[in-house]
Structure formats: C-alpha cells, structure tokens
Image (cartoon, rainbow, N blue to C red; front, side, top):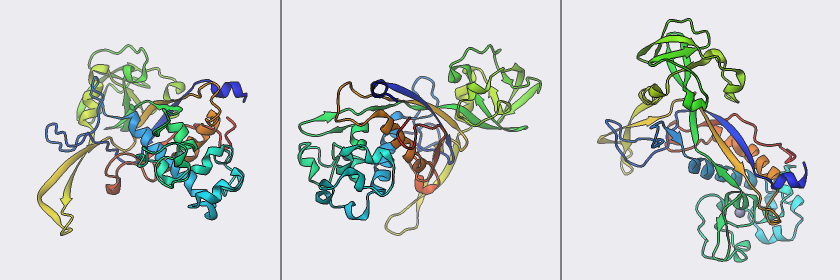
Length: 341
Ligand SMILES: [Zn+2]
C-alpha cells in the first residue's frame, strides 16, 4: 500500500452479532413496566448501540491488547522503555505495536477517562497515569492535555439493527425492512416477503401476517452477517419498530443488598435487552491528517482494531455483563494482522 493511500479517509462497514442479550441503558428512565430501558433511535424508536459506546469499549480493548504484549521488564517501567528500541519492548511480532514509536509510552490508563488531563503532553511521558497522548490508542481515539489535544483518527457510527431474530412456526427468522436495508423494495401494507414467497401466512412472534411474495434479496445484501437468504423476512417499514420492540428480551432480576448480600425486599426490577442473534451494522471511518507525522499509519490502526475485536466476544459491551449480558461478535475483518492492508 502506498503512503498516499494511508492518508486518505477510509470507511469500513462492520457487521456484528449479539451472542448474549445486549443491554445499553439510558439510566433509570421508565417506559411502561420496564424499569431499565435501553438506548433507542429517537426517530425510529428502534434500539441501537451508540457509536460512543462502541468507541469507548474498543479503546479499552486496544489498550488491553497493547498492554498485554509488553515484555515483563517493560510492563511498568517507563524509564526502561525510553532507553530501548521500540521493537524490543513487545513479545510478539504485531506490526501495529512495534512500528509506531509512540507506543513506548502506552499504559492501561490510556483507556477510560483521563485522570491526568491537567498536565502537559510532555509531562505525561514520565507519569504512569492518565492518557499518555503518544501511543496508538491515544492517537487513534483522541486525547486532551492542557497544552495539546487531538480528536483522534477514528469515527464510529451507531451500530444499528439490520436483521432481528423472531420465532416463527418455521423456526427462527431474521426480520428486516426496506429502510433498515436502505433499499427500495415494493411491499404491500401489513404483509411480509420471504425468499420463496409461498408460505401464505407466517407468524412473527404473536403476529400472524400474510406472505405476499418474494423479497428477491441477493447474497450481497446480507453483507458479513453470515445469514442465509432463506432466513430473511422483509416486513414493511411501518411495522418493523413495533415487531422489534415487542420481541425484546425482558428479564426480571432482584437487587442484592450490598451489606447483607441477600435479596432486597421489594427490589424486583425488569430490564429489556436486544436479544442474542441480532445482527448489527455500522461504519468506522478512519482519517489521517495530511502531513502529521506524529500519527500512526492508518493501516496500523485498522490492524489494532482487528487484533483487539476478540474482547467484545469475551468481555462484551454495555451493562450487566456480569449477569450474562453483552457479548458481541464482530463479524467483519477490519485490517491485516501485520498492518499491511
Ligand atoms: Zn496512550
């Protein structure tokens, strides 16, 4: 890849699948009988994973991956790191770690809130707390120090639901709509489209709807979802929000009193979540400012994302990850392992 290409903005479409129910709370807002509601798009009323959650979580995972590959001698000792060649600091051959000199300043605190934003960028090199302002995490996701700040090289869109699983008499099907697919599909009011179009009637949860024809989607419309055309049911835009919202996972839990460790009396609460099997789609845009040599090559940033996406599948995203919520599999390939793509 030429250096010139690295400086251009690049936009990647990413597909992800919920492997647990996903709960991204709005913080105590109550709708109907649900106590813990999830974030929704204000216009469509369809639940989503906000881009800010994706960015914040991924920042943490890149910092975690980078930190886990410092050789033992250099894990905590910033002074020792300063005297070595960057290639000697890491225990593997990942180019995104070894090819960017700023990584010598990285620490786990480069994730999360900056606890030392009042100091200067220069001072931050020698203090083992807050964002370092130099490493690939700080450069890719942004940082702010008292004398310099940078908005970062990556922009994360929301992860929107593209295919949503519902139970039918023919097994689980994934529903979508023309608007979700961003595609013109003719569909009669209150009817649905399947691949074959000959089932006559099909229930989506408790709703029984007439099948009025074939959706005629192609493989490319499914992206990296891993689904088959047989799995897909297209419903009208006027119904999609209602069907999704009435098929969310709703769980009742008991609050635990932190002092006695027992269930609090009368502290039953319900939470809604996006169900396991839901397919999301979103975009990540990467941009390197022309001529700014303090930034890593974009190809290294993409491979850092690729290398750390595995943590979404073990540690998850959003709330209640200790109660079996939040695991997400990033299905799309973001970059080359060696930073060559
Ligand atoms: Zn940093």
